[in-house]
Image (cartoon, rainbow, N blue to C red; front, top):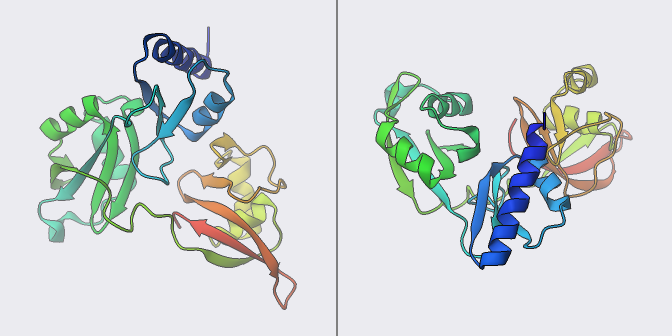
Length: 243
């Protein structure tokens, strides 16, 4: 039986072929970074452009044949913010999945200023607008947004941190303020990914521009090493999306 990744590759190949032969736009469901990396390796008659609704999106759809990506941005806001409590990414995603939506219809969810911005496909947007009225115990309203508010679509500012080395385990420890032992356990639990693919070795050194994700904690983009501190540690530049 074919695994899910092979089925995704076949689906992308078919979408590319259809766009090439008919001169139309086709697009996929949202793909994980790992699926995007695999898709980029395929030899397709019509190349894919990956879009997620904003420049730094992690989950993206593959678009073939040009045109705008069919990605909708929904603002989900508590109707009584004072009584909503702190709603997490997991709270919002859980409420969306409880509507019976496939994960492939949903892209990134960005939290800001007590609300969420959820990227999705049109089929999901109609269901969410019609049926989502509560996240955890908080009543919410759903409206379409043209785009993320100014500032949210930009990558986070550069952070300069001290790390023991450029090894992945050292960078994860520095980015999320962990001990090396705590960082090592994340690799043992297979919770660390580089550009969407499982990290094969905690001792590997990422390239500038690589995205390192830690499931349940956040992600960062490695910008490069800047030299040593007075104490002999390495100064590295990161753009940290969650901590």
